[in-house]
Length: 369
Image (cartoon, rainbow, N blue to C red; front, side, top):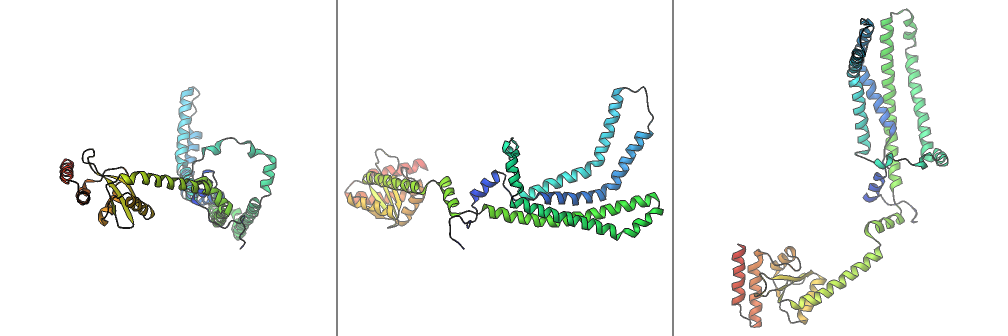
């Protein structure tokens, strides 16, 4: 395969898929919806046809056979018309309701929940004759034209074959009773329509698979597409690199200012480093001045050594403080005892009195408890 930047060799990202969906670009087949509607309509008509026919026949008989009242007012006529409309609607409800529900289910199964109010806006470009002519000559429409011709040929073949296979029965209808003719026409129509609908559903499934494949191919991305998307979603890589560099410099400057104020640095011993400060007279609890892992931890230890700050190895304490406490925040109550032990050791090394430290921490522990 070629390695040119114009080749779509990358799968579409989630961002690209979401953008396409927001623009109404989804994989769907209108033929599939039409074919399934036809099949369901035939099935519903076959099952509800007799009931629907009886209901409509009864309405016609009531309308024709009812006594005409020449002196009835308009209100009575409106009520009568309303009754006929409601009865007709109730008779058609199973058929029309089933068709509507089927349409919604098929559409939802193809594209899922999708609301695009912007597509309802008027766009003059949609009625541009030149663009319309270009769309007619596109590969997609040419393919659809060929697919349509195949469907027409298939439907015609099914209908002609169905009629040809019943030709003798059709000729014999000349001497049959009207009820027999009606039943034959009804069953023949239902059977032929069902066969056509099944064939169209099969073709539509193939069409949907093709539309899905084409949709995925159209969404594929070139190297340039990926770079542009990264700029849009994450910013220019050069700008990000400069921003990270500035952030690292600011963090190092902050370490150089904060770490010298610490009373002790607790380590893991090499992976983590936490600088602690505590003044019993002004602070309720020790606070974390700085913390870091790996290279930042090494920087904290280096500054501590340069400024004569004690470094104490306490692995569990270092891990707990690193996970639980943000920079500038006091330590949690659960770590008071461990921190007090470290500070007591540091005070002893420096020759300071530990009485005030112990009393203050014990007092804070009782208050928190």
